[in-house]
Each structure stands twice: as C-alpha cells, then as structure tokens.
Image (cartoon, rainbow, N blue to C red; front, side, top):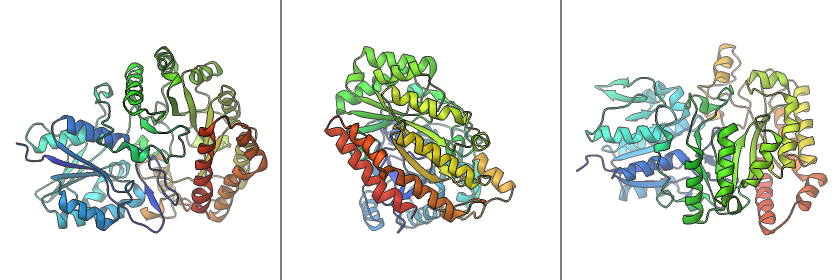
Length: 485
C-alpha cells in the first residue's frame, strides 16, 4: 500500500482582472482577453507516467476549465490529494505563493510541489516565501515528479534537481541533470489529461481537432538570450523520427486528430527531418494529418521546405524578433537579417504557412530599428510570404542571459515579477514604453489592410480556411489589439 497514492496534476486558477493566465506550454507569459488554451505536454506526460506506475492521478487544469478559486477549493475538499503539483511562471509567482500557503492551511497533510522556469532560476526565493514542500528544477519535471513520489513511498532515492526542507532548513539534491532518455516516454494518455479542452479553440489549428506533442527538449540552437526555457533545458535531446511518427499515427487512429503542433523549441533538422518526412509519406500520414512546428530562418533550404510540404507540414512558426542585425547578434539568434525574407518566401513558395513573431523594447533599440522591423514585417505580410504575425514587448525573464546582463548593467526598471507579463517595458529603453506600444498596435493593424485581407480571401480553398481565418480574426481583434491598448 502506497503512503502517497492520490496525485493531483494541473493548474490552479490564477484569478486576475488582467485576463486569463496562459501558463501551459508557454516559454513566455501573457494575460489574454481572448485566451487560447494550449495542451500542456510535460504535465500531461507526468500524469501518464505516474498513472502507468500504478498511482491514482487526477488531472485538473482549472484555467482551461474556467474554474473560480472557490470552485477549485470545493473540488479539492471532495478530492483531497496526497500530493499536488502545478507549474508556475514569473508573473504569477506571488499568486502561486498565496495559493501554496492556502493549500497548506486547508490541507496540511497534502504535499505541495511546483516546477517551472522561474523556480529553477530562483529556487531559494520560493522556498523562503511560501510553505511549499518540494521544488522540481529543470524541464524534466515529469521524470522528477515520479521519482519524488517513488522516494516518498520508500522505493527510490531522490534525483538531482529537487529542493526540500529538513528540520527547518532548506536543502537540495544538487544541480538538475537532463540525462533522461526521451525514447522511454510513453505516449500521453490523452483521455486522462482532458485533451478535448485544448483541441478546438486554438488559433494555430486550421483543421480541428488538434493537439500538441514534443519530438525533443527543447531547442538545438539553445543560445537565444531571452528564452526562458534555455535555463530548464540545458542540452538538447530528441526522440527517434520513427517514435514520433508512431505517436502521430496513434493520435490519428485513436482520436481522429487532424492537426498536430510539435512544440519542440526548434524542430529537428537535417537527417532527422528527412527521415521524419519520408516516414510520414511512406505511411501515408501526410494525407491525413497536418504538422505544425517551430522553425528557424535559414536552417532549412528550398528542397527541404518542399519535402516538408509533401510530408504534411502546414504551419511553421518563426521567431523573427527584429530586422536589426545588431539586435539579432545581441540576442544570439545565429541568423542574418537578410536571410529572413528569402527563407520566409521559400517556405511560402513551397506551400507552407509561415507565422512570424516580433518583439520590441530592447534597451539598445532605436526607433529607426523598430521602423526597420516594421517595414520588414509589413513586406512579409503584404506580399503573402508570412501568413500571420504576433508582436509583443520583450521581457527579460529571471534565469536568462538577457536578465543577467540587464541586472548587471542597471537596465531593469523593476523586479516586481507581476510586471513581467509583456504588457509594459521592463528594461530601460531609448524609445519609451508608449512608443513601443504604438508600434505594436501598428504591427497588428497590418492584419486589417486591404492588401493583407485580399491575400486571405484569395487563399480560401475550403470551409476549414474560412473557419480558421474567423478564429484568427477573433484573436487579433478581441485579444491582441486590446492587450496593447
């Protein structure tokens, strides 16, 4: 009989008048007025692994379920777990501490555990400011959570990367190590993890139902100074191409999934990509499922883009970030500004749908730099090379090289973590916050220009296209434009 048997995994409600907290599967954080609930791959994997190990698992995402705090606590009153785990990010860490302390007050026997990039960067802060029992550092918190449960039941020794308390003192097992073999991961139990809640109202999916997977953890480039996940995934690992195709086959045949977003930081390239594409074609999955992924400008050539299209790829998310080479170099993006247009055009010419992300508000950025970024974005969108775009204010999250550099150079305007939600400038800038927000509004307004809308109308081929564009229009008009008003 296991001492710790009933396990809760999910997200508590983070109530705020700012909007809905987008925590799951996000390298960055925003409050959204028109939310998209993204399937949380690693927490869902944790739930599956723990269930497969013989434990009772309750997967409840209170954010995606739109539960209030009172409803959530009423649920826990009736279903009090032995151990409760959730993931947290920088802008909601203060709320997380309050939730943790409330949980320990109401359910003193429940062990509370959290993970995520913020606590990995600053573990002592959370141990000192809350009554949390354990912290799981690094990105493999699915493996670590199972290890912790086994330890609490006397079946294992603790792995590295875990913070805990002993006789009133804060202890840890050492720096986390990413030595886990991703090829041993089970296919996620989608029924256990309530997959349908995330399958239909996602602006990235053209064909629904859709879902998320991860071929690797997390990015083979792994050098971008602003990315919060570089701190939790310190080396790149990838499953085999055959294993990932097997999962896609499983998802199509069991759940009739029509579109899959692989949210690896950057999709594997070269031989791995070619093997994956050829397997998709050989098994005729390319005719059944669309594949979306994150990609880097300049990492794939025209022939490979055509192969990706043939293999069923549709949506490619590119981090453009800036048209300034100085900025790209400071961010350690590893690509040239002149590659952006040619690479984006090549993807579009192959029949793929590039989505570009843009960030403004760097400390060294001039308004001339911003205008250059705007003009490049405008050209990509109005020529139809990029199909969609997202623009945000750059945030230096704790644990990133950008944060460390800004702190050393006295460039941070605040270390109030609630302000790190992409709604205001966190770093001192020459341009100023108001101007930055005006440029972001201007970028989003490109989606309403006659030329951009004409591209959309002319590209309509079926009912799925119409539904997809209506969902995208809703996200921009009711969400993104209001978020930076």
